[in-house]
Amino acid sequence: MLAAHRISQLPTDLGAEVAFAGRSNAGKSSALNALTNHKGLARTSKTPGRTQQMVAFSLPPLADNEGQPLDVRLIDLPGYGYAKVPEELREHWKREIDAYLHQRKSLRGVVLIADIRHPLKEFDRMMLDFCFATHLPCHLLLTKADKLSRNQAMQALAAMRQSFADGLHATAQVFSSSAGTGVEEAREAVVTLLRTPRD
Image 1 (cartoon, rainbow, N blue to C red):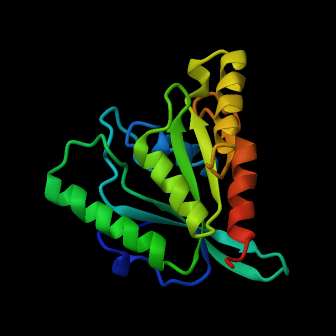
Image 2: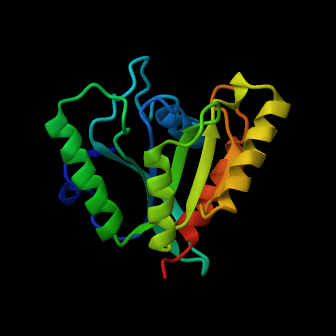
C-alpha cells in the first residue's frame, strides 16, 4: 500500500491499474475490502471522507491476454463531496484527480461507486461523461443493495441501465459488501478492465 498526495508520488506508471471513485459516503472502502477479500485493506469509518490521499494497492501479478505477467494495482481516489475538509484541500484533490485521469498511462478503467438508493449525483455523471469522452471503460457498482429488497434493487439497476440510453455509458451491477452481493461479478469486471489494453 502506498499513499500519495500528488500523482508524482504514485508507483511507476507501468503495468495496469483500475481507479475507484465515488462520493465519500457511497461505500468505496468497504467495496475495495470486499473485492480483495481483505477486511483491513482500505480504511472504513463511520465518518465519511477518511480517504484523503490517493492510495495505491498492489495486487499479485495477473496474466495478461497473451499469458504474460502484468503488474496490477487498484487506486483508491479521495472521496468526493461529503468530507468536511478545507476548501484548499478540496481544490487540491480536484486538480490531482483530474491530472491523474488525464495523464496516467497505466489506467485501464474506473470503478464508480454509487449508493443504489439515490440518483446519480453531478460528480458521478461528470465521471461517466469523462470516461466516455476519453474512451476509458467504466463499471458502476450500485452499493448498499442490502438496504433494498431484491425486487427494488433490480428495479433500480434497470432504471440505471435505462439512463445509459440517454447518453451515459458504463456497465452496471448491484453490489453489497456486507451481504456479499455481486462481489464475484465485480471481481471479474475489475480483472477484465486490468487485462484490457488502452486504445
